[in-house]
Image (cartoon, rainbow over all chains, first blue to last red; front, top):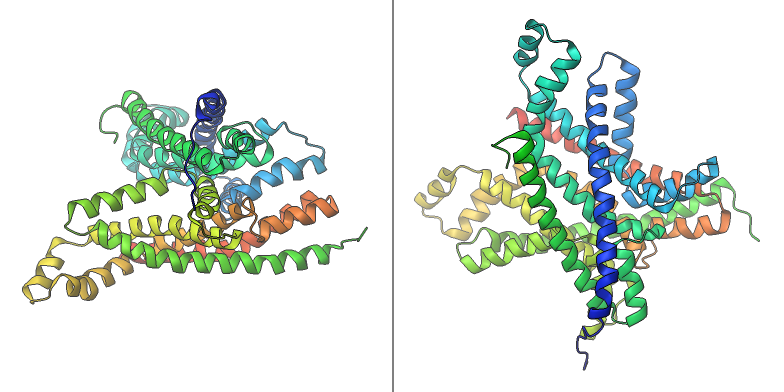
Length: 222
Length: 215
């Protein structure tokens, strides 16, 4: 038994952990912005007049939601080059994360759009706004307010799931942990520290999103 | 060099999928048992028990599953257990599942009107009887949709155990891919197998959800 925990390596490892955390933050920042925009487009497309478009979005959402993120990542990173599309690991990770998150948030945004009373868009149309203005200025802000907590949760979940992209050698937090433990032979301690960093990241990210949401969408966002 | 035909690939993947199913079932069963205990702590009247259960749930929901699996895989040997990927995978996913199941059931318990407890008490039932006869059956029944939804999440989560060396669908597919150099076909088939397992459950969850919505 005589095993004692040793954190003596930690001092020299702080740089690597910080670099990894920065990459994780970059990944989730890009995913959040692109994924949210994409899911608004997806949710609108799912409610459009064109049946083919509606079906395409439905298929995309169902395929992504019913397969593991790891497999999607491998498919994009290892599978697409067979079709001549070769991606840098970071780009592949961002693409996989964005497509994954957008599938979930398309459903969330869609639920928000459905929750806005029809009278709102009717009133806006009656005031002479064009349909696009109605969507962007009247319906979408109200929908976002309703779904903001669910959206926040999904972003945090995606941040945690991004640990998986270490498997295609993206130098984020988990990848740095893998490297560290290979050098220090202190696997448990290394992953324990990195787990705590993830925990802190998820708490901070949630706080930031809530504060940002209050500022942009107004009070009443929890 | 052995030649793999399409059917060889598919056959090997399907054989490996048995382990994905076995792991999902084991983790769900284990998670239900541990989750029930966490639920009891979470809804108890003891402040420390509630605090512990909340912390437990927040910990597992606030850290990546991959890290939980690594800690299980590297941590248990330090306590003197000889650990293999299967054990680490089952234990890791069991704890992961228990946190989510406890939280879902708690939401069910919270959703019940206060009067259910009061009525139970006025019938002379003590705390455990109230739980067993009145509260839990209703809580389980109204949370059936999210539980099935979580099962889908759990099946997908088993893919991560490939990283700690458990020989399930994804790990087998990596090996096959290394031998055949046909990543498009191999990972496409893996995605398809997962889809076939998960999609019916997703649809079932949707039906349940619609049903509870009506009531």
